[in-house]
Amino acid sequence: KVLILDFGSQYTQLIARRVRELNIYCEIHPYNKKLSNVTEYNAVILSGSPFSVRGEDAPHPDLSQIRGKKPMLAVCYGAQYLAHFSGGEVAPSNTREYGRANLSFIKNDEPFFDNINAGSQVWMSHSDTIKHLPTNAVLIASTNDVTNAAYRIEGEETYAIQFHPEVYHTTDGKQLLENFLVHIAGIRQDWTPQSFVEETVEDLQKKLGNDKVVLGLSGGVDSSVAAVLLHKAIGKNLYCIFVNNGLLRKNEFESVLKQYEGMGLNVKGVDASKRFLDALAGIDDPEKKRKAIGNAFIEVFDDEAHQIDNVTWLAQGTIYPDVIESVSATGGPSATIKSHHNVGGLPDFMKLKIVEPLKALFKDEVRRVGATLGINPLLLGRHPFPGPGLAIRILGDITAEKVRILQEVDAIFINGLREWGLYDKVWQAGAILLPVNSVGVMGDERTYEKCVALRAVESTDGMTADWVNLPYEFLQKTSNDIINKVKGVNRVVYDISSKPPATIEWE
Ligand code: XMP
Image (cartoon, rainbow, N blue to C red; front, top):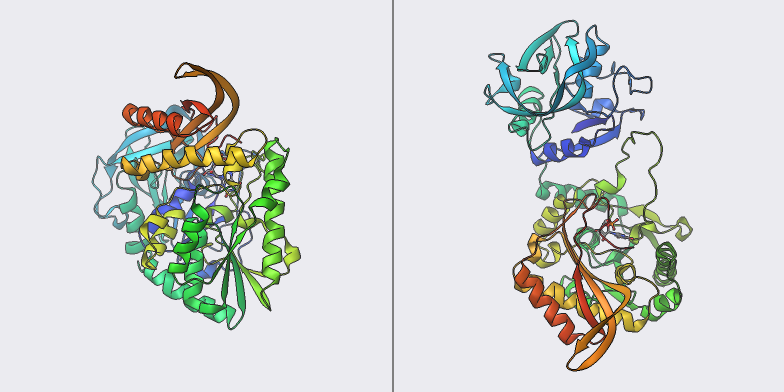
């Protein structure tokens, strides 16, 4: 496996994605975390960083356990760090070194550049530049503007590159990583969804033995894949609970429950709609709504879990982006924009041990594992849906009637996306009920009714997103259907805000 030492670059997760696309397992760890087990890794990659090596607060880790002992690839900041502390010189660059460049020189017979030719496009993003290479370095590639674009250290398997192999615009980036990891470090490419399933099932069986495990299903991809994986490992000792908080999509509770039963899972459906709606009565502040739902969920789940005799484990569908401790550039925790609630947030008073079989996977890998496990592609392809459900899409206070209106509107929109073949082109879509009445005219009558907003975004991870350019004909048809069929709504608008500065959900 490969260790990626994170210096806080916005691209660190991308490095991990690329390595895994090569069917090689890797982990990201913050540079300042003491690693006791460096020997377990077959190679190390140093990430980029927003810092300058010359800055006072810049990361200056001790690499003595790694250098010369493990194959090492230093990217961008990593390359500068290596130069700065090994007899080279790093200085502010006087030309801009951002964006596209081409390798104008590649040294002959370097295995690092196997199958890569001069002219290959690379992506730069740095303000310092390496003026002089470190001691024992051999220059292996340059661009027109950046002479020291890549070097290696004589007598070590240490390579350094100023450009970013992990970004899409570095055309041969993946080949370069393969050259380093496979040709130079000799790592086998045997980490596949199939091998992940086999190893994880075996590990789970060892870890859980005959113990009972409880898991909260949400209808989403992560908890479903976690459940099927655990079920494969421990069968009837897995107890799933699927809570209807009354804020799900139209008919979702019944249809998803049926689907789970069809998959052979032991699922208890708990209809707690009333409890949630009571807990939400009269609350219109978004954060208070989230807290109320989170608390109600914990109570319901706790009650249910206590009815299972001798259960000792709580399983969660946590995935890798939730657990990476990335290095924040400011050194401090980032601001809480929204307090996210999902099944992940259960408190320790439940006294259950935690098992998280998907903790090492990215979302698309979870989907691939799900496919290997034979899970229905329709379930695997579902749009993300927030834990607090429609509550954060009903602006202002929540009533059963508002939930009903929004469920109808949402169903027309989502079914329409499916019918028009647009569902899989959109990362996430939904409708929002605004706390606004507007005047309309239906027949000869004046109306004064609700307005709904439709939102459809494209994204890869929900961190940034852009609105989707849905066909006008589709929007026209959908708007018509909604106003004609859903009583209480006389106006439909389409949300054309990107994230940032907006967010995907309105609350
Ligand atoms: P925002 O609104 O922050 O949403 O742009 C980003 C992604 O997160 C989802 N989301 C949630 N998911 N519990 C969840 O499980 C939550 O409390 C929650 N709030 C937002 C949102 O749907 C989008 O996919």
